Length: 422
Image (cartoon, rainbow, N blue to C red; front, side, top):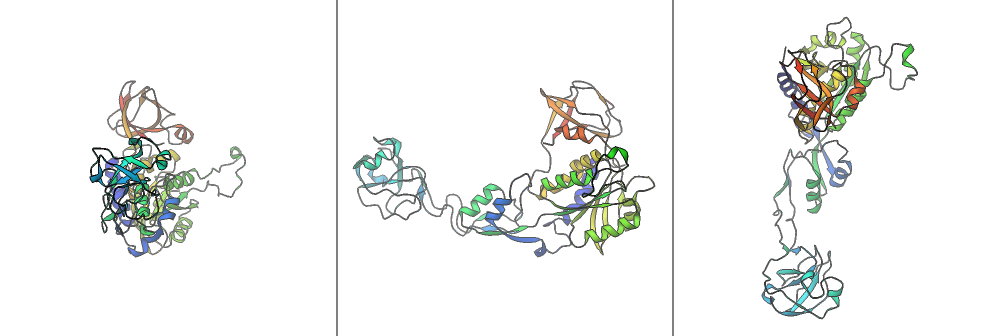
């Protein structure tokens, strides 16, 4: 039986090369898209991670592209410090100003280009007028005695020289990177397309999305909680998904998988069908194609499987989770989310902390138990029990609570590691 760490490493080794930019079977050019900087900005945010650059971007101009004023004030020659100068026409941002005449001071706005002949700016607050627009009506202005060249001037190239790399290949296109690209006049960049994961839910009991559920108490059917929840979890880390629901029939499962994978999916994620029961279609259909069932010392989520599997005449990484919904979500957080989050330029690890427990609990000593909880007054309170069907309790939780291998009893005050999942 594998440890959590061993299985996490196995999932990463299997999945990472198959992702865009992971140097897998797909050619590099096929995984790259040219996207406008504006479109990237509009599509960013919403918890979907970042697009990742496929090639370095060089600055076509220095940043800033010209000397400009750091604040509202007066552009002057530093050699005129201590003098009183005649005030000339103001310099707004966005215009190329005429050269500064000798013995003059030009009112200048923040971001405006420094005129030829000027080498310093002093703030309007240091003048008798104290502010614009009153200073614009003055005929003369005194220059501070201590003014030196370069004061309040943003020098050309002080942020980045021309030809320097605004961003590197493999770097996430964060808001700051997008701002630097736009500021340098870069209109579009090459980015890797988002990863594609086919989410396959197994079970003859699953309702189709368009089926009228009605009152489920009278029948034996349930909604596809796993497919919906995992698709949402994948979207949070920038993954495109498609969903398939397949009955507990080996031939139908294999046929549906071949048709759905096609040349679209980078990774296949299945739920259910990997235990030792009579209708374990994932194991029965895919073990002959390369799937390896590898139990992990974890509760919930002990049954696990993965492998490079022949699907639709090509080899595709398959990661298989248990069918109970809490098991599937916990498995995603522990094993698959870290590698996908890193591919989206996000931290691979959830924010974590070590906090005292407010409650008592039991745990199988031979397994790493992952409970659900919330934090109240700096202490961990368990939400619901350890059972893998308690999806509503999972939805109420804000943290995953880790009870390590070797611990059979948790007492109030015992310190546990928690991951924030909100």
